[in-house]
Image 1: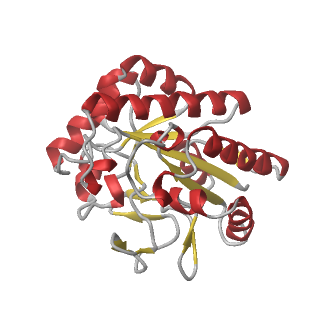
Image 2: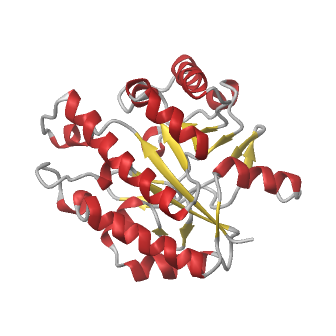
Length: 261
């Protein structure tokens, strides 16, 4: 079974602050919410599920949207926010907030910027899987080439990495955005020669209009409907190749039942 795992890090749009650009709290949330609505519409149009790793801050701000999202898609945790440190208390509290808002048991976790040193905290908070592994070298961010590139267990916690290919290729948001669609299609086909899943990661705020935001062009362009159109073409490509779209926890449950993990 060849499975596509669409994942979205659903968070307040605080990235401009990394580039010393002022942005109001209202704009941080409204831009992210606008992009999320467009993404949800696209997924509904093509009747496919996805997994939304969501910060507790964003979920509290848009509780009705999150409740609606959780009816069809998987809601997972992205911590409390990008700025609140990951501790046993904040990880557990963020999970409880998502549990209460969605009235569902939250099974998955992804650390902001894929950056967490102690996965024991994730296990202790009651999560069944973690997706904080991105085994590539990203200049000025991290060097994770030592990380495992396949699904594995860490002290009883299932770790599912972002899909990568040697020596240093990935299909995360910056690659999908900056490389031609041919790259995404070729990456997916090659990846399925060695793996039974291909994971992509985006942020809902990427699908909003970022034209007036003063951040590097390689981060914000394409955006809005241009990026949405690119993602839709990729979805159509996957359907034509009969790849299956699944929520992360469903995919992992299938592997557990099949004794693959």
